[in-house]
Image 1 (cartoon, rainbow, N blue to C red):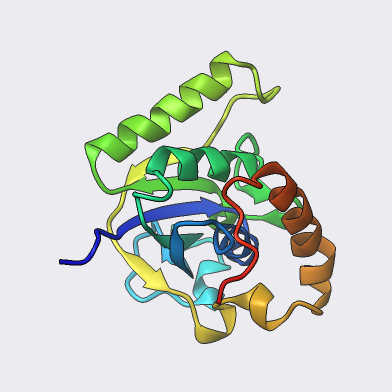
Image 2: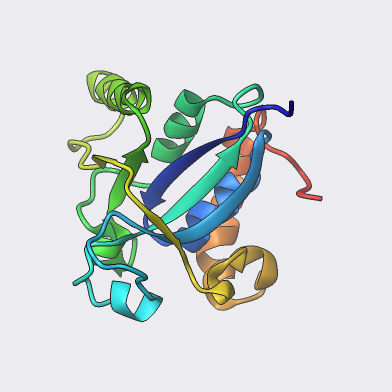
Amino acid sequence: MGKEIKEAYFGGGCFWCTEALFFRLKGVIDVISGYAGGTIESPTYEKVCTGKTGHAEVVKIKYDPDIIGYETLVSIFFSTHDPTTLDRQGNDTGTQYRSIILYGNDEEKEIAQKVIDDLESEGVYGDPIVTEIVPFDKFYPAEDYHQKYYENNPEQAYCQAIIAPKLIKFREKFKKYYKESNK
């Protein structure tokens, strides 16, 4: 039998950024951009951008729990976006950019809540954390052109202005978990 691979689902603003960061973690096998947390079946980017679907831009992370644990992923998630801004990350605004954790079981829910409680008791953020913690229902992969966006478009203006600087900070902060190559 092969080793157990687990999945985690996070939304922290634009999925291009979230995907690029988590894709570089040791123990992460794959990251897929998509939509979750809403009410309509088979959402498209255009529909999600209207803010009327209830879906958020999220990533599905496949990981090896023997290398990186769920609590570490949650902690990294909170340090890679601003979980105190409601329906907004930087210039991206709307419910599709909300901070959200979609848990698969009670243990994941408890871990996510514990991380939030710890961050708030330590006063890490000046404002309350507004991240939603909701049960996972269904994930819809985003269109092909959204997948591995930074990997496929590193010279694109958004990638250069937003994602590349985040990756530099991310690499420095998470040296222990950072993998230099995805090959």
